[in-house]
Image (cartoon, rainbow, N blue to C red; front, side, top):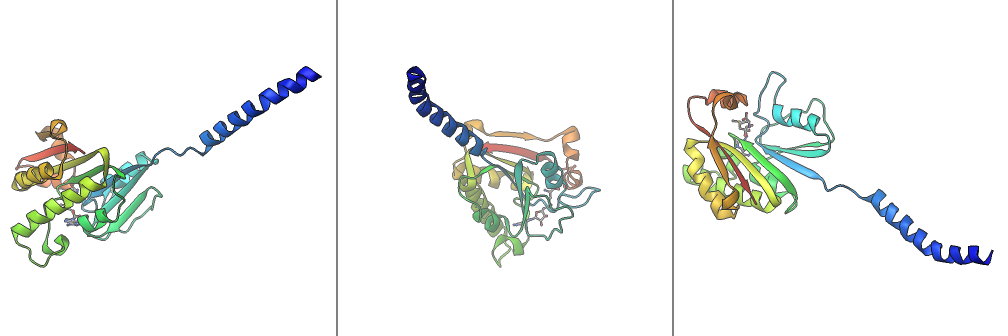
Length: 206
Ligand SMILES: C[S@@+](CC[C@H](N)C(=O)[O-])C[C@H]1O[C@@H](n2cnc3c(N)ncnc32)[C@H](O)[C@@H]1O
């Protein structure tokens, strides 16, 4: 009986520690994976608008998708992991926490604006260029360390974009750029529309 009491005295604190450890494992929340699609509304397929965000948010239910587009989107089936912001790229990105996003992607959207969406009343090319730089700087702030920015752009804006990426501080050694070809050019409605001009895929890492 004495031995049993002794054993209990030794075991009790160990058990308490193990129970506490188990409780903390049970409360452990996986860090949230966040993907932002800039200009996602214009992505058209036979199933409607925002086709890419629609398909990805259904395939990856544990990832949070945020679409930012100045065009209105009526969400048919509003999934919990899909948030849509009807605003300009830079204004939408500014609302997110710094260092909180895993991937920001923009396909034929960053660099192709009208005057209403560049937070300026002057639609001159100089303002468009400045707006791209501002948006890329904001994207850099919002990405987690090692977060990725994936852009598809045409020749008319590629130099401006590359300069902005360099200035924002993306890792030059990890930067990838190539011209899309073959079936890659069928990726979206707008890719098909631009088939006759080169489209570049750029991937940079924070
Ligand atoms: C040409 S579509 C491209 C759509 C899609 N990514 C694709 O490849 O099919 C451009 C989209 O970007 C949006 N857009 C353009 N400039 C914007 C800006 N500054 N802020 C917010 N949305 C913008 C437009 O409303 C449109 O939905």
